[in-house]
Length: 89
View 1 (cartoon, rainbow, N blue to C red):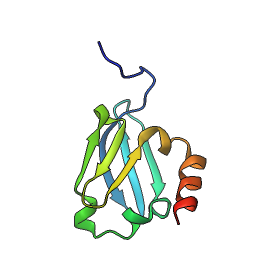
View 2 (tube, one colour):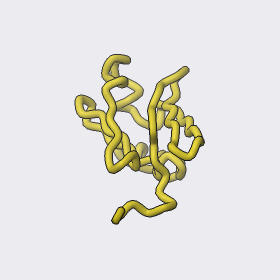
View 3 (cartoon, rainbow, N blue to C red):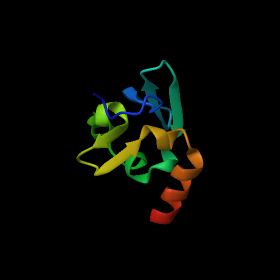
View 4 (tube, rainbow, N blue to C red):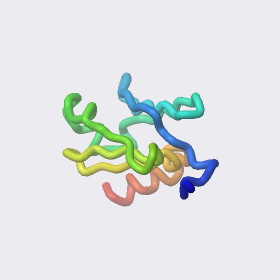
């Protein structure tokens, strides 16, 4: 039995392009958001950006060396992501 909610968006892969974080979902959608929303990612060396792993069966993305976690659901609700970034800046 899975505890994962059926409507929970899940990532399958991550890439970076032209100052954006691109997250490809298992349902075929792609989310593109500006790296400006995530200062740790924005300021990281390209090699460190590539060292991500999916967590929680793809409900989140983790960068160990950067100590950064991003939820896929949060990417779909940009107001929450921007508000969190502003509080931590």
